[in-house]
Length: 506
Image (cartoon, rainbow, N blue to C red; front, side):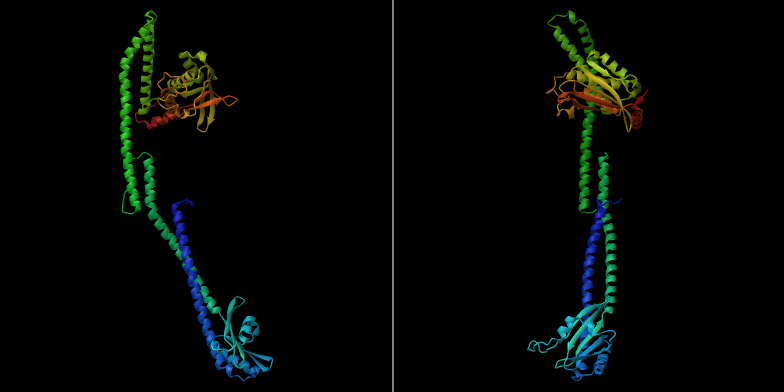
């Protein structure tokens, strides 16, 4: 559906308006010029003929003509080819006018405008510039819908006064025909301009449309998209610029992808290679930890440090390997029916957090999720709350109805100093630590990032915010985990998109 914001529609409207303006202006000028020419030609012909008749016939009448003589002369004057009616006014005695009309039913003295009568009968001083006391005057008038030309003059030396009355109906009909012709021509001009605008818009907008489609494909990641360039106009230059930009972008993305792939491969290889010596180190540190009480007190702190750092290094390597699996797209979902209350209890019990965590969860809330990944998310969120906010940490569970189905909502809240506003957008970034505002962490900075990745693979999300007390003061941080209660649909979608069976469902 065309909207006024459409460039094609705007081009058509502009073309139509320009054509309409030009056609109306040209038609108006042509009509006015033709109207004046037609009326002037008719008017001059009739007035000249009337003047000649007045000189040839009315001037020969006696000084005191009879009514019959006036009527007869008027009929003779009107009988020519000019096609007008005549009215002659004389005097049978001083101050006693008589009137002779060629056709009293058509033209009488009442049809002559008073202003014209005054102008005709007014005697003007004779001078070099004005050799005649009386002149011929004319005026256009209207009777009903028919226009008429009325003219009059007076014979010098006391002769009769004559008036002519000519219908301009034929000229009006001709002018009406002309106006209709000009109107039709204007309409045809507008229609033609619209058609030309369509052709011009198609010619101009086809390359623009191709450019838009190419830009859309480029935005979808089809970086090999190119435009066919033809011509040397501005649109051709734009197409060349687009091709150059697309080529540059493809090269940069390829370089970045290669570097990212190399970096991910390096991290994966490094993590894999570290596992073997770490296994040996872990075994040694476990032996040292068992014998820590029997060691020299001077050596015991160093042994404890080695044990702690070895465990930290082992966690870091495991986290790095998990991150590389997410980056490589090889992370797997193994779905099972999970009682959420039992899952959370098992998570905090395995890490000896029972005394530090308050659980608000009804038993019997069952969700179909990956229990191992859910445990990773819960361990990271609760551990982060205990580490930065302190106990007691409150974990609450509820369900909500959404447009996509039922949703599981798990909120983890601490009672610490909260999260600074400038830190909130980065809490799920890899290796990000807000050490300036929180106690120094011994973590890797990957825990919350891995928690988010595990939530996303389920089709869920995690949000972080601060809670406030009744006075508006921050009294802790809140992390809210949202997961679909049944991730089977997400698993099927991932299985469809995976050509190697990356998702498994038990």
